[in-house]
Length: 432
Image (cartoon, rainbow, N blue to C red; front, top):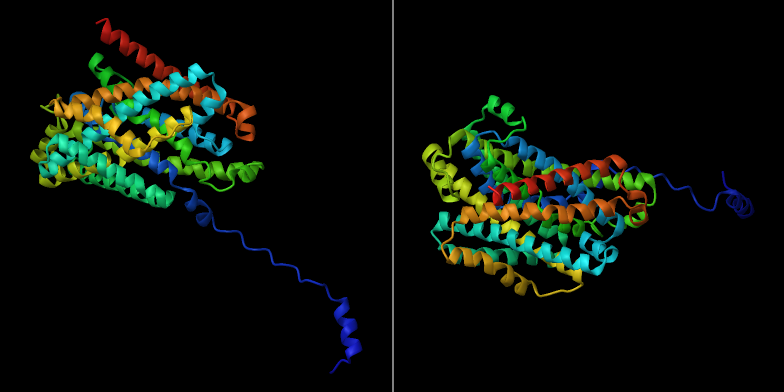
């Protein structure tokens, strides 16, 4: 059947101008979720830095499973805190230090900056010393030279950020997996006592010495400098969060991705920390001469063989390299946020490197320096946590992202517990 030109024209005029577009299939959850993961893994490296090695092995060797509950509690606190700081970045598009500068009086801002810099120095001390000890164990490199090598490698790793956030995140995540793999290998050889784990989950202390180590564990787990850096990793990381966050469903999707990121990353860091203490509790009783990272390395070799000692040294080296680069990045975030000042990364690296090299050059005990650096970090937690809670509870700043009351209440309880623990430690230490 053929149509004339007139009939064809009439028929064509009655058809719709454009065909309706087919509804595109909903993207798979995996494709929407996995590209959003990463910032928490960068933050998680700081939770398994060399300071954790010192405090966790000291705690396990001296008090068995007694302080295991401290690691679990500290890790749960870390999950809450990192969720809040990431949410602040999502909601405001600015990091915590910048928000403090915009909202607080100038004297308060300067005070917060000064303590944040002190925390950064303590952080670098732990990471540089840890990397130096690892290089000494693996290759016999002198400690002072190992400190310089660790600083240089951290600087090189940080340069990966010039190619975007993905290369840096992949390198740091890879080093985190190296750390985890080393302790999984060692834990299999050491074994686990279920009864000891159960008893270690009951909150208790064993004197002032255990309280000091508990404070160090808390400072090594809830790292104040990472509270600043994580909030700087999320703005722009999830695309146009301002547009996506205008609707309840958009906010819920972004928060879900961010919480999963924190849960996986912090969960992995928590398991590594727990594994350290369990290994020490299983292998070393009543201290058993475990007074330094070198003695831990030797003890693992004696009881489990050279493979366990090698795994420990490699994990320590990976921790020193990765956490040092994250610590340097945190220092940049702190200065830029509080003061709106930038200094070259190399200059900052040299400034924060000096105390660590001084400790190593004067022959100070690296493990003692590591433990006390974590105590300093613990005292810095409230100065980051209290402003974070106050800012994320303000609706005029957060809008629809504002904390629920139960979240603010829980965070306040956490802050109060940390401040009370610090106060008790001060009284016990200086008044006998």
